[in-house]
Image 1: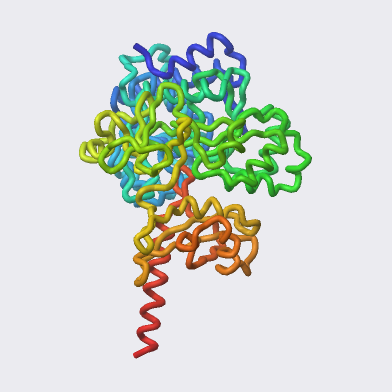
Image 2: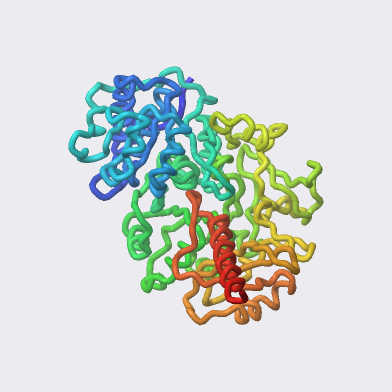
Length: 516
């Protein structure tokens, strides 16, 4: 039996000189990627890493990320992508939970490495590039020959532990197997017709499930190539599309907004851009129409870490006809919407979205209670509220935990956000509920705006034609910084709600003090 490292071996035989990875400072052909995988696999074995051991990856986007993932796959080790945005204490929690045996990192992360050294030991930390004084370079792992065949690896063996973004509390480790990777690769390759001539670009950390799994894994499977960048630069992305032949991008809506705001966008040659996949939030209709006018169809997708990052997709030709829909279950996957008793909902009736099939996680790492609560009767309970229409197309209504009950009525923040996002002054928006003495809860709009004078009256007037009175936000919180986002690119509403409650508590205390 073999795991996904066989993909690199295959493409090294059938196209060794074709580019697999393109990056500043040097990429990899498929032959070079296979060699790097085989070298690092042999080095990890020489260092005592065995099947089932966890290897952490804390690094900026680089070709070495893929070499290490494939090397872990070859020896049956489990790769743990570590969020580069985590603080030292947050990193300690994840590393301690995973019980890492080794870590691959780079010098940029020296300030947070003490917490990893305590858990792993300095001798098991390897640096991409020039190591700091006393550190060990990744090249030390390349000196033990080549491991060209898989070591007792089976499809159901774990390959990655991807920690959830923690939007609803402490992060949990979703265990994804080699079979899950085959499943997400088949899903994407089939629906997006991916092949070895396609070229994608990644600009967000590969530690994010959306980038490192559902985006990158299908390209390793189909033999395409990936352009590696470490940040989103709209001008450079346009250049890459034009000069490098990028045919596939994966983004969240705010990135589309920033790209469209780039002065050169109107003149840029986008004819080679075949697929623009959007996730994390619904795509505002004005963006659908704008990109459609430039010949770029936007593919709306839905996925979550526990489902390997890709589960439903609405193809571009349906986007304007079914705005807000996330489409149909992908190849090898199933989906349904059920009520509180587990019964199928009628078309248009909101209920919880359940997923089944090849992409559902194996379990949560060493957390049987969370696994039992999430996977029941073979179905992954997503916690997302959804509807399905008579044609079988799904629409995400909201997170069940984000539901606002105002005056006894259900208010879905996602519905409000989709309307407010159309306002010309709104760059980012998130709606959260806060306690209200009269209504129980009331919706508050947290907005990043191009107009510092935007007020709640202007927003509610704009929404009046689309939202019933009880759904309109009662308050506007303007923010001068981007809204906080987790690893998947989703806005961290838990943080926004906590900020609002803290500010309200300070205001209430000041009012009480003034009254005294």
